[in-house]
Image (cartoon, rainbow, N blue to C red; front, side, top):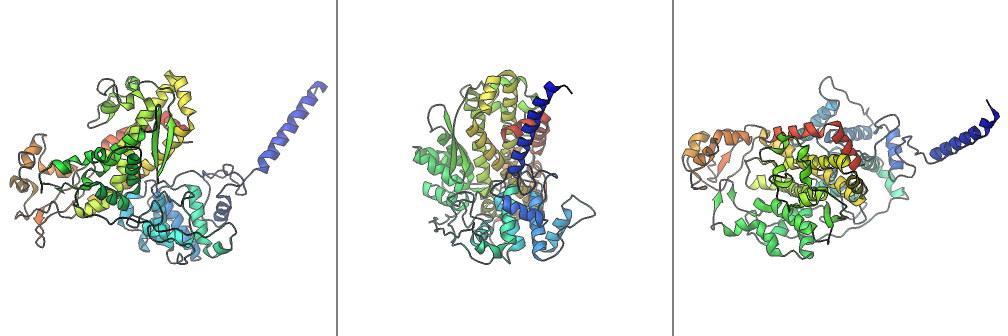
Length: 576
């Protein structure tokens, strides 16, 4: 080797050694390269790996921000239960998916009920994780370490799904919430890092009091108005009371809008049918009630709130009372993507492309066109919180007035995710300056990451509920009507003008205008069977016989495009 090369090589070797020392000095004790030293979950993760309850996504990575599916949450919970009982934590199965053995164990031990079956492949929310962990370990979560009275967690009301489990975990010291105000963020997806914390704090319950990093806390119960009757008058007080009990995020959106100057009359406008229909009016689904338009009111009121920040800014609501205000960067008219969006997407029956994006049919003054990706995301956010409201009120609505018809609100997540990612891919190729400006807008990306994850989780859970409802046999009173058509099939039943002239014609004739008969209608909605009066109340009882969502094929088509590599990569970049 020539002498003139020796000194530069020596310098290079020294630099490499310094860099290596720097890397090793900051390496996590967990052994995972994507877990930095001093991470808020490092101690707990290390312990759970040593206990055999958690492993990495590879030999060297953990993916701390990765989101769990319900099946994975169940596996972690069952392993924890077995560990606490001093038993081997590995369960195998001769057939089924990799987690089937844990599902079988959960069923046999009364941990898993029918509601979870359709949810196993959906993203798990923090509330669902709490429910599953509590179902497996409630016997040891008995020591009250924190003073957490009912209705004291700001974003969790006692009537909400999962509330019992969440409050038990707060009281036992398993969690303090997701922020300084002790909000739990129940509908946010649960991350792998958060899971490590939950598992650690349950496994080592007896050590919490002696842990110097653990500090007890007290919360104060909040005044929650009484839940109004299902058919209570459509007033602002009753709307807010229902939201306070069932959907605190919906209540927060409405209250923030009113604080920003949106008048009550504007919000009540979304319930206008309640004031214009004849007194005593009943449709085939029952009386027109608050829940009939609640998700629409949340959706549309969010839009009004979002544009109160000032010129060139938008407010994106991100849950549990929080919002992110985003200043827009340069954009182009969203209709430009007409050139690359396949016609089968543009022409989806009931689809939203024509309304919000298309250069041929969408109004030029639509925010989703004029404000580019920021406007599309505004619509995405509105649909998110409308869907979340539908999820949170679903059980209550079904218990009071079962809804038979399907709707395609749930596929709006896949639609608008596709629109957003297509806009970004098009911008990257044709408007690089616009693309770079958007990708540098950290507040926008933070809002997108949060809302997209909440929306995806809510859609999966809502569809799981609907699937369980369809397959499990639905029964309930419809409209408080009475009659003597017991045992008739659907065709004969609707011949009888049983519901009156709801549409100016009997229902069968109304459906005929669309080339449908009652069997088609109920079959596409997931319902079939006979109609008979309930002798005790005179109400009509409809029993489901299974079925599928008529919009599933549209969702599958959208997923086909979203699974293409360029879309997967763009989504990962925006949510990094």
